Length: 332
Image 1 (tube, rainbow, N blue to C red):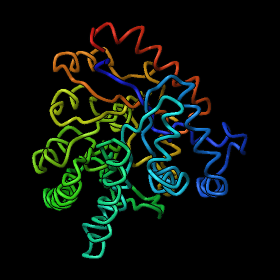
Image 2: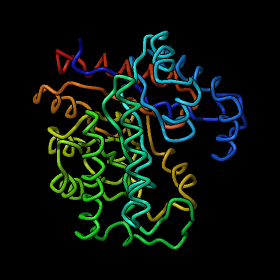
Image 3: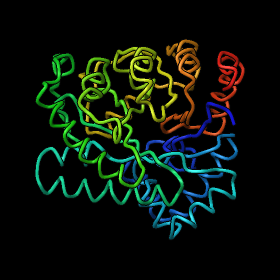
């Protein structure tokens, strides 16, 4: 079996135009279309992943999250069968860390909700034969999850994250990590751009404050680069904690204070800076060198958020990997 196995997060299939829907559809409108016929959307995304040539899928943020998959197929066994029919497995699954962990940091009620959500998520993964929850984290600025804030300035994104915030965040991560570890599952924190765990010094702090038995890292090369960081250095410094990784490319950095609108509108701006694997600024040759030097083995999630042509773009990224990167790590 190859050291590096490719999957994709099914957010890659979220572009409305690929489904024949209006290209300018808002996320709430896309969400409603999906929920009106979820089996059609899930089955078509699984077909797309198969046709692209990946081996696995990672479940996405809503509407195609783990609870939606469970409701759609009726049981983990039935969902597993749908994957197996296409030669796929479940590699990992996304959790809404921004909402769940953020709420847990604010109240006892929020802690109870987060604990229940992560515990149920972990049990679902175990039944699916997977063991990694990829969790978002919380914003480093005063942006909320839904409410727009059009007055942000550069300092909101350049000032250091306070130690107190990091400690509160790590406390909740450790608590949730302990819960999922009982099931044999690990939380891998996704390096969301503009979050408190996307820059090298912040990642180092979070990793130093968390227990590796329950908490690891999911470096997303595109998000790190978008936020002005060095994805290769992040990988090199944290390789022992990396459970899975997102292979996304990026055209150029963008300061977070230039984003406007609510969370979905800001994300839409970010998407214009992401690129297919091998067509941006990420130094993938050095990235592969780190994996080779540490004999790393695991899932590589080729993610192209809201791709207008997901099957073709996934294939293009895989071709770049096999033609230019795999030879750098013979076992890959």
